[in-house]
Image (cartoon, rainbow, N blue to C red; front, side):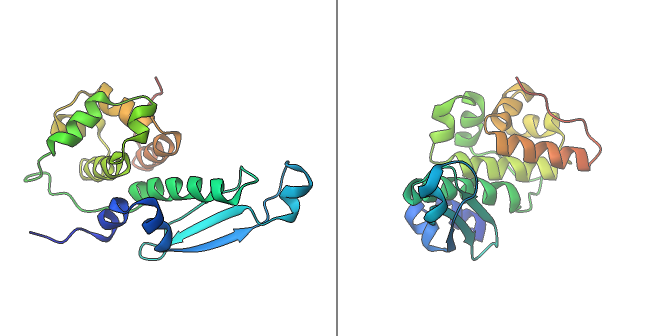
Length: 176
């Protein structure tokens, strides 16, 4: 059996372990928030050392809250940016992935621990199918509407998918 990829190992880590695999920068955030925001280094930037993918958060005056948001964003950024090749002739959808895509929307799906891993696999499959939603959905055994809802659930993921589709001359996915 093949070893899990760097991406898959990173996505399987809990938040603390993922943060410890990163270079962490703290800095003063600009913008509204009053005197405290301008005097404390509450903004957090994480750069995953193995992949080079980075994410940051600066909305809160709390460094702890910003770190948690940055880790979540980093997890999604790794899922969206780091691709693994898929052989469409032999690849079979894991049943749990197809089920997650079918269930597909709402805050509960985004909180699902395997959400970022599922997004990574969906993006790999879309890439293998030239970003054809219909072909990828058929390969997963789900409807195009279910796959579209799943990708549109998180704004960052939705924008990334549409950027890739536009780069291939395809029309963007529509929101609900």
